[in-house]
Amino acid sequence: MRTRTQVGIVGAGPAGLLLSHLLALRGIDSVLIEIRSREYCEARQRAGVLEDGSVALLREANLASRLDRQGLEHGGIYLQFDGQRRHIDFRELTGGRSVTVYAQTEVVKDLIARRIADSGRDAISFSVTETEVAELDTASPVLRYTDAAGTRHEVTCDAIAGCDGFHGICRPAIPAGVLTTWERDYPYAWLGILADVPPSTDELIYAHHCDGFALHSLRSPTVSRLYLQVDPDEVVANWPDERVWAELSRRFELPGWTLERGPVLDKSITPMRSFVSAPMRYGRLFLAGDAAHIVPPTGAKGLNLALADVAVLAPALDALLHGDEQPAAGYSATCLDRVWRSTHFSWWMTTMLHRTPGADEMTTQLQLSQLRYVTSSRAAATSLAENYTGWPPLSRLRSHADQDR
Ligand code: FAD
Ligand code: DHB
Image (cartoon, rainbow, N blue to C red; front, side):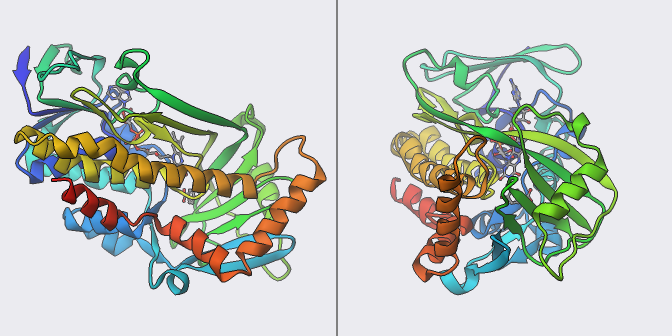
């Protein structure tokens, strides 16, 4: 079946879903395709922290009614090391900025529900197969896919957005030699659990421990999310619930404080990688989110970067469709400035907090020195707080994008 749309969007993760909504608000049609089922997309456990700029963006786009009711605003984090737990007060250090704990699963559910409420069941084609993008260097790029009922589609577009994550098809469709990529693998992974137990802390705890990093996050007043540094080739089967809780209790140990335990609802292992490819555009194909860049999860930047990219891309596509090429020409550079800042911050947090297998005692002493500095110098703490809450602030990035018009 041959059809036409203004923007073809590959991937219904946070980037693709928000882009289709922001375009619809501007009166722009899109076709959004996704290889997974709706149920799978809504259940996939991933990130949990939104920068204040991401919250403002979702509010402005009228997507925050549940987020405003259920999101938990946090004004800081704890850093634990060397037997002490020290607070970093974001509000005080940054003139009132904060983050909100609200799971990516909930952001995705809200976005899917809104697209379907606004544009009907066909707003998103789930469970498609044989996806292809072609004619990318022409004014009419083409998106091809087979829908869940087996019908083959060929959609002629004015532009295509590759929001299909790190393992998608869009970035590899760009001819060899166009992209420059930078990549770093880390010699560890995260084992994450979701547990049906009230959090044992009021704010997130990032813990440095001689046996490896641990993070105490949460999902709600009754559900906790916790992570443990494990070897990169670890498998979930080696980690029965009792072993996970015992290891978490050891790494968070502090006199007078107890980690509450509860039934484990989900358990998975996530590899850690830094990856950037540039430019984020080839002809009429625009890459956004994990399709263009990956950060290790320490610092919770991945989801926020994906939302930031499409906040810049939506007005740039609007201008392009109205004959103004300039914002689209600036899209990649505008986003990459923030991408590199988050890439540096995530790498810095990761290397400060994790145990590198085989590293000598001097490496540990350097980490502890940095942790003491960050928790005692106002300037160093402010730098952490600015980056954690989002730098440059998303509002500044968006007004830059507007000035390109
Ligand atoms: P994605 O969410 O990956 O969405 C891409 C979508 O495209 C997917 O739904 C995929 O099924 C679909 N797709 C792929 N190929 C095709 C195709 N050919 N055709 C159609 N659709 C396709 N970040 C944090 O900040 N904290 C965390 O704790 C954290 N944990 C993570 C755990 C895991 C296992 C992973 C993979 C990521 C994690 N992240 C975390 C990162 C964060 O979740 C991502 O940065 C965020 O999901 C990026 O959104 P996106 O829309 O760009 O990509
Ligand atoms: C969460 C994940 C992170 O990577 C992080 O730095 C903080 C919180 C989370 O899943 O809640």
